[in-house]
Length: 116
Image 1: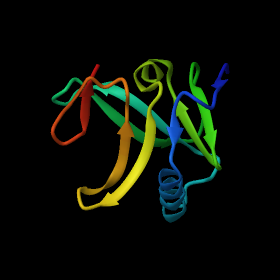
Image 2: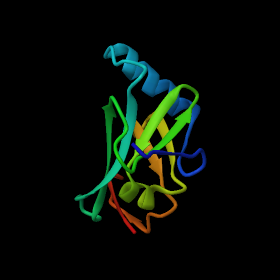
Image 3: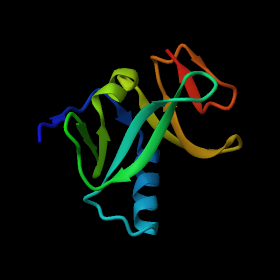
């Protein structure tokens, strides 16, 4: 399997790392799993983000490791996510993961989808 490992394409905050580890622990997900980050068509702005746990990388994935957390990103998604910071918020506007994506030229009101 040809995977690429890079450190700078997508960054992840300590708050997001801690939340990912917490979710994995609460759901008894093996530390060998990675968080698959992706982009798919849909939403009112054209593209939506996707997050899921995956036991292994796939052909063409980029593997990013940060502070004990693995991120798996397919090549198509990496094109739209390059330079993105994954953060986590539990503030007044709700709790959840936040994609600070410099490539997004428009977003919907709820922040669930974006366009480039």
